[in-house]
Image (tube, rainbow, N blue to C red; front, side, top):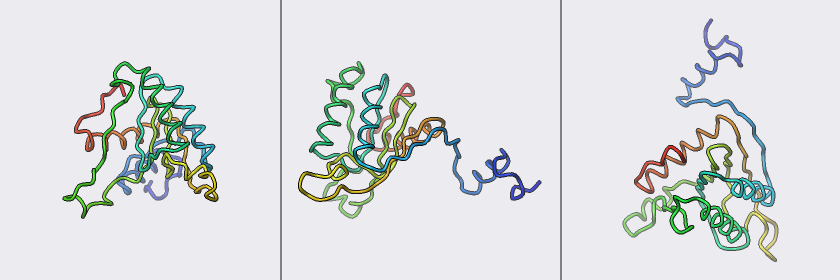
Amino acid sequence: MSPSRQPLDSRGFVNYLSAIVNARLFAAGELEVLNTGAAIYAAELEAVRAAKNSIHLEAYLFLRGRAGDEALRVLTERASYFRELRAAGGHVHWYQPIAWYTLKRFNNRTHRDILVVDGEVAFVGGVGVADFWIGPAGRGRPWRDTMVRVQGELVKGLQTSFAENWLEAAGEVLPESE
């Protein structure tokens, strides 16, 4: 049977689709769409508080303020739990740092926002860590964006995306246990 005539839920069709888009396809697992800053931060911080082995955060924006300070407090609290992390500060690396000789590539950076906790649960979307998404006091309405909470096989793909940028930013391979 030709690939185009296979049932959409067949393994053959999945293999065909994977080949034509040149990407690995994952079973969705559990997905939850989060579309308010309050719901997003509550779910992310709950996952971080429950972390046992690793927290991998890739954020385009991480700014001081109510959201950033709370995230920093929870991350620091969890970092002190992990023996491998230096002085409760974790490992932080800048992806494509800005310097005079990189100005032509100023916007050549990732705009992804990914959080992977213990390789079991992940969040992906467009919300960084800043008060814009929860509504800065006296400054109007919060920004509107979406994150998706993911569990299941798709988390591996998000972990791989994080690991690729970690390698470029840190110059080291992310340990397998993380």
